Figure (cartoon, helix red, strand yellow):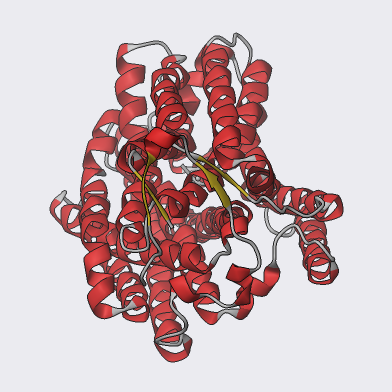
Length: 534
């Protein structure tokens, strides 16, 4: 293991790169009404402003990580950051919705490289002892960006034009680019086999098809032919990818990694967190905005305790995992996060902020404990030559889980919302009923056109119905967390070979790490990212 003098500065560049990706996941959702007004975007175009980014990010992540292993992680990170910054600035200057969609796709493609490479670089510059803390700090960048999105978007849209939500990426990316150029050493697989083109084509097509079906589901429903065809073809292609990889002489990604139970369970924990946390975030943000009447900026401020919990958990996770062990830490993180979601499910439409201020940091701490511990286990098991491709595989699975979380929790919310609200809409015209049942924002609009008492009754009923649907989703998420805790406790082995003593998969290929003489201080062997009823 090589310890690099500028490793903490390099980590700063990685945090900035991860932060801007996290921000871009949620900042655009907050700005969609403004984009509709300024660009004249249709509902479908608004969808694709978000979906284009998500599809490119998820679909190309695995090939991007593999290319980084082959061509150089630093080199590909610099190119991706440059592309992301340039496309962000270009997006801020678009005058049509179509142009903005194209730039969002380019941003997603660049993000597909930045996402896994940022994680894959950490083992090349940090020792085994320092790696858990580095992962906690680096991973926090991405997760902090998610709840910060509404806050940043609200402030920018209040004071500046809509393009500022993309233009702000420019200086952040520039700092990350400079930091990566100066402080991150090059690393790659010096003995890379021939690129598995068939595997790359299968995984891009399969993941893109799956995510497309998930994106279309909220509007069309789970039984729609387009959704079923997209999900079915995606699942078939991913299954084909799996079979091909297991038989290929030079696979794109070594799926035999999943034979290691610690790797498999750690990936599963990351998927559970992606499913529950992002799904809850996407249904909880509209609750703060529409049901409780906060603007985007005030909504972001109210989510700050979640950020505080993530930071607190990140700071303590490396010390606790050394004392408690991986299995206990993963189970504890899931359990704490589930407890926070159970607390949050007790909220009512007219609740004050006290319960939220307690529940959100609990969720943040639990998320940090589980997520950063699982990332450290994954990086410790991945062969040095496959950190890019392996990280991309785990990130892709997390992205798919998060997409399903948004879709499934959104469906639970939608069904409960319609069922509870229906009994309060008697006497309204069919057209008014359809609008009110379509979303809580639509119900608010209808209520404003009804006579005083009736309008007030419809508005309160819509707010209560949304809250019921949201709490149903929170309880399901909490239940999944508890189930994950039990599975980890029963089936994950307490100890296997240490990360620094991996079997032949780690010995099979050692990464080539090239440093300039001024950067080399010592060499040592390690010891031990749509629509729902809003």
